Image 1 (cartoon, rainbow, N blue to C red):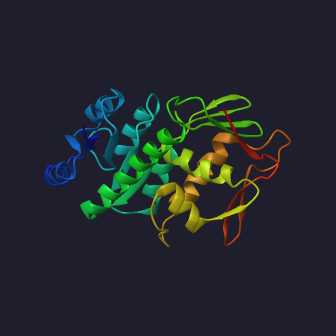
Image 2: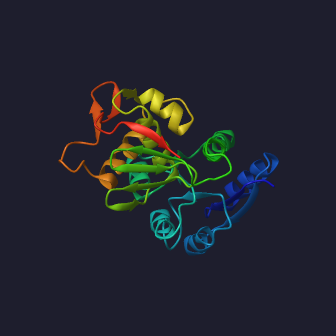
Length: 240
């Protein structure tokens, strides 16, 4: 059965266009035009993806995203009509997994959804029949590869699906620099956009949520002009 997509956008024409295109691509689609209804449906757990517009009547997209993230980790892709960088940054900081600026080609939306779907399938395949058995352990941090959850020395850490993908790439390469290009390719499933800051915002969110090491040293370091490095003091290993 196809993956279920919820579109929350007050542009009925766009919703009809995207619904038709996504249906042809094998997705099951439902569209609503008000933020509060969208939040309720997204939280219900019946959808695999949410496509959420920033500009909505009543509760705007940022309010809806905040409501969703209080109780759900469903992947959310934001749409920004203005295409302003501040909209994208705010959305990512609130827990969006990705964004697209209007106008956009429906093929790109499908590509983004497929990339999220591939990561989920790869995560499930990597752990075999017991989805919670394998963990990637790095110092005080554990990444549960099946459920895509993170546990630090102080307890569970709430992160989004794409934040998990970024963190997993960095932890697997702990002690080595991962370029922004490679991080974008491996974690986000696309080429680096010279004007995009998606990876940088995900890194900023991870730093804020994970905090430094117990000794106060930086967990994820920037290498100017190159990329990022997860500190070598936390060497990764797989725990069965």
